[in-house]
Amino acid sequence: MVTSRTKIYFASDAHLGARFLSDGRAAERKLVRWLDSIKDDAQAVWFLGDMFDYWYEYKYVVPKGFTRFLGKVAELSDAGVEIHFFIGNHDIWMFDYLPQEVGAIIHREPLTIDLLGKRFFLAHGDEVDDRSRAFRFMRWLFRNRVCQILYSAIHPRWTFGFALGWSLSSRKQGLKKQEEVSYQGESAEYLVRFAKSYLQTHPDIHFFIFGHRHIMLDLMLSRTSRLLIAGDWMQHFSYIVWDGESLFLEQFEVEE
Image (tube, rainbow, N blue to C red):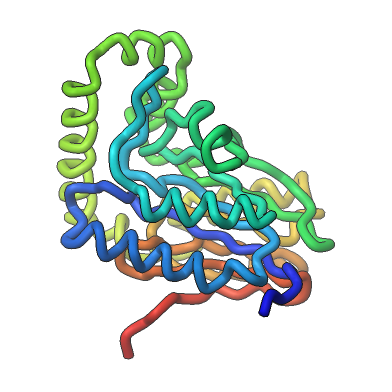
């Protein structure tokens, strides 16, 4: 029996297709089971970036795979569920394929929006990552339209292999650094620092929601504002749900 669509869901960082996933097909199936479990009460689903480990759309070529995930997303969209994708730092190059094929809305910048009576600040999180100049330069380079056009001139057989290999190497290096996998405290977390600074000029924000950091975090910033980091779909299998009254950070099919 179909229930009323009263909930909004947020998820991030599945990195589908990544070479560092021990069983990428199982991870995709689990994500699909979650989407299937929320399809009757979901008003909207917001994917907050890096749902794909690499995504680049040529004019006539898109990455192979992801058929289970994209099929389920299309099913939800056809049933009237709003589908939103933020670009992340791994899947920046989304253009018109997902809007045309599955009805998704693509967001390329952080977004402030009212959802069921509260004001949200939504972003992947890399947009405010200030840890290194190299990262900021690469983010600018990848988002630059001229660079994207030049990159598209390279045959996919070279770009796809290079990108997935680079991601694997980057992930291995990141896991060697403790700050990549654990909460570092309010003063050290750049997403927390950003939110606190942003609140000084935008005190009307009730909820900041980010992905990117691969940690689960629910933190009160003030009496009226909270920050949540959505975790990921590689080890936490976590998501956020908002029903207009309560905002929860949950995990799906957690083994006790």
